[in-house]
Amino acid sequence: GAVVSQHPSRVICKSGTSVKIECRSLDFQATTMFWYRQFPKQSLMLMATSNEGSKATYEQGVEKDKFLINHASLTLSTLTVTSAHPEDSSFYICSSEDTGSADTQYFGPGTRLTVL
Amino acid sequence: GDSVTQMEGPVTLSEEAFLTINCTYTATGYPSLFWYVQYPGEGLQLLLKATKADDKGSNKGFEATYRKETTSFHLEKGSVQVSDSAVYFCGRGSTLGRLYFGRGTQLTVWP
Figure 1 (tube, rainbow over the protein chains, first blue to last red):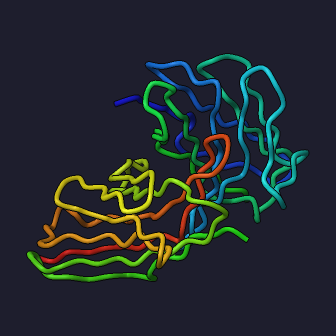
Figure 2 (figure 1 turned 90 degrees about the vertical axis):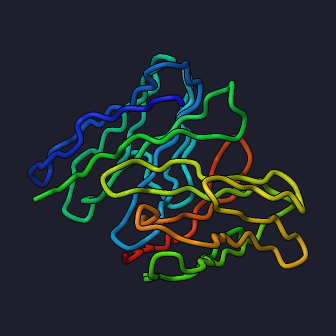
């Protein structure tokens, strides 16, 4: 099946700094990628839809100035957590839909962000 | 609003026991429905899906039937194995490829 990678797998940063997380589709082109946040013992929350060559679409309640998304190529989307605070600590997961496999999303392994 | 509600865990079973994880949804229309599985240390993987009412998705001995009358998509397996221990997520599709998930159910199977 299609492979989606994320980098880094875990990151620890100081409060007030910005952190960039990369999501790559390794063997297919992805015009659309999705970013999720997973809280401990809670569901995956869809944060935004990343669209190649255009602005991301954010879900209700997600601060777009806090979570900057850039999808500059067909294989790479980045999520930047700006001015991170301890409450931003979470597990961030991306996914992508392979246009050749309708309705099926492939998920990255996730990035554990810890803000001190 | 639209949502997915699934059975709270954790669920603990002995090997070869019968498994049911309940999932119901609310949505406008008839969305595609999914079960994803997250094994320890790995990313989510599609387990099965159904795209219209009365469809049955199946994979690896797991089954789920799209019931529009009860707006449900319960996951079942007749005989679980230790290797089935994982977190299971019920999800529904939406416009533009978006997926919305339930809270996840942790399953632990003991030998």
